[in-house]
Image (cartoon, rainbow, N blue to C red):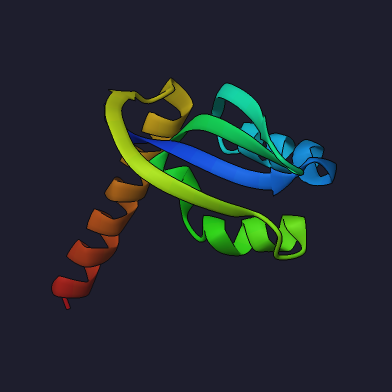
Amino acid sequence: MLEPIETVEIQVPESFMGKVMGDLSSRRGKILGIEAEGAFQIIKASVPTAELYHYSSTLRSLTGGAGVHTETFSHYEEMPREAAEKVVAEAAQRKTNHDNHNSH
């Protein structure tokens, strides 16, 4: 099963790098590169689109409002087996609920 992947560019003050990098890791993000720009660090990462839901709010919380980001569609890639199984299970549950609702 394929999932869409975004290239994310995040600009954060250096003091928030650890928090942001840890959060990206928890979202199945892959760091593509880091560069300095004045007092900021620019993190480039590849992150599944599904993991970026409400990311701007999370980034604001992690950085006290100092972090900004952009997202650009990059490509599709194979989902990890556990994530694919979860999607299939959720779809089956929705179908069961829908079928039960329509049988009444």
